[in-house]
Amino acid sequence: MANIKANKKSIRQSARRAEHNKSVRTRLKSLMKSFASAADAKLVPTVASSADKAVKSGVIHRNKANRIKARLAKKLAAAKK
Image 1: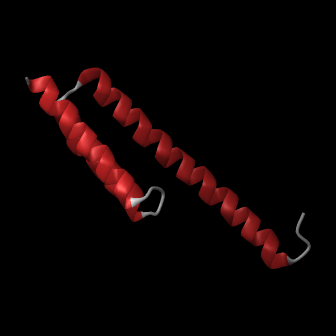
Image 2: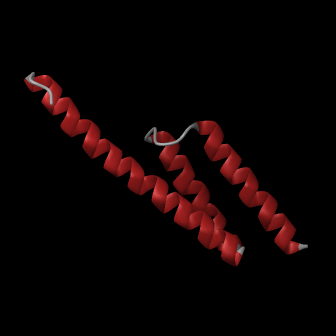
């Protein structure tokens, strides 16, 4: 355990951030799974927006969000055929 006051605060902050980031990632994964099961075009903007927000807050990398959106578009195009 840290002895310095600033380090104790840092531990609290990182724990709080980790919890928030985990909830954001879980929500994103849940949205992707709901899209995969339904392949509904109405869910694409929601998932894409959620991925972009995760990038904006630094939870996931920009390339990962782009990869998620590309896969969504690919699955949607395959479902329409």
